[in-house]
Image (cartoon, rainbow, N blue to C red):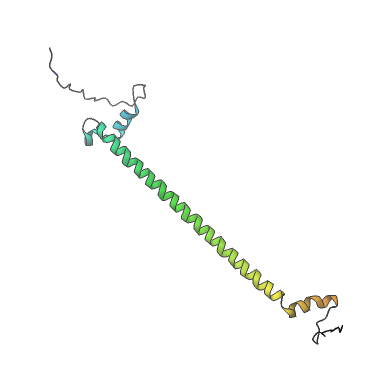
Length: 128
């Protein structure tokens, strides 16, 4: 029987950049990131779930922050619109109050020949 021994990996001196069907995304990542200096001979599989979980949490945090900033922008926009409408309402109320004054009404109806009364109205009493 033979004994269990480690195989010695052949060190590749030829780093050709061929894009054949034998290359996988993991070999491309290892080639680009050069993880063998940091992690040794490969990525430990037991670290993938915690790193994936942390990456998911980071994405959720970024998404939540982006959504909150968009909501703040919308709130500020609506508040500005409310202030503009409030200013318009105040202006319209002031114009309405001015136009409903007795002196202003007298000026408007004077063009039609209706004049303002100088004396108070007379009360008519009927005896039965």
